[in-house]
Length: 417
Image (cartoon, rainbow, N blue to C red; front, side, top):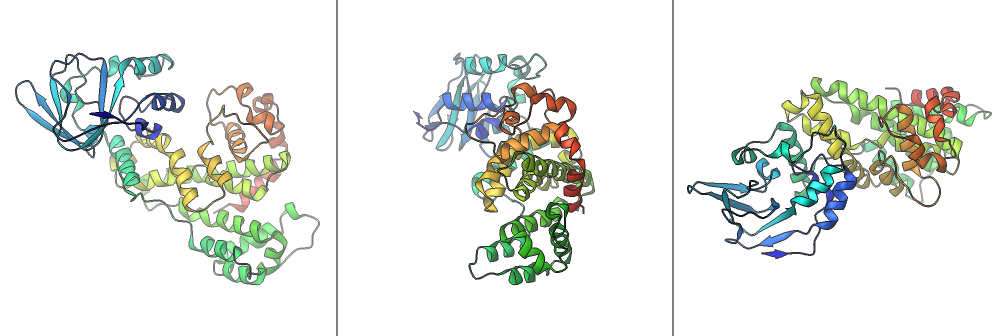
């Protein structure tokens, strides 16, 4: 058995049943203190009667659990039971032997206890709550864990099913990057989608461009908006279709996600105007895609009816996965790194960084205005000061945004559909 120099990732720890509800900051801390172990086939990971104060988790490969009475159970890393600890009780009732080359974690229970002690008293995550019979450790996990495991398995194998950027947005993105492209060619591509074409003209004639004569054609609209802004808006308008689902069970959740996303986008655009130094169209898009990872989770949930029918289970899966998946989807779509970061950090309420405000700051403040974040203390949210706002403004509903309700409404109207 060999301890490697490789740390587990926080995402890897979050899969594990006894660690999955720890805050992200605690998972990151624990990950930095642990190392993956490797062993050859036939090596013994744990002896019957062992009293060491640690817990084993299988990460890759398979192991045999041999009971005192000779009974044998095989656990593979692809089994849902692998999310639970191996032979938890002490003294151990099992001998654990590698059935194949394997990778595993050995977690000092004191490390886990220290992390748990930092949680609020209301947390249900306690060591005592996991002191169950060994056979329960090896029993089937609930549907939520099965969904999460399926997503991680597909992620690790390179087969993760992610939503694709609509074709019209892809074609226009490619055209904008072509030096020989002009407004007429871009307009021709946009006109293949009449709904988006109409919205592009409407955007060019909006109050944001007030004082300028009205345009009537898509070519004129593109010329007024500029190539990059046109591309951003086409992506923004095309995304609506991704928030639709054929599942009646999940339809309401997708609609709620769309409404939340377009409102956060509208708020972010107004905040961007107030703060300056932002592309307001890109801020709108950042808001619209900040939770795009939810689409992947909902897509998988269609194959897990027990999750689709259980709001608590579905929301728990979304909380666990959305930040990582959002960043992955936007990277796959080749979105600007600023938008990738803003999606990953959209709910990192107390995030701090040097330099001017960024799109992640817009997401944090816009969502707090939406009421997302629960009992977050605005005074500790440094994004406010970077955007030139006072934390006290959140208590008044961010007066600056309320005063700009017509601008917010106009931005939301562009995303109607």
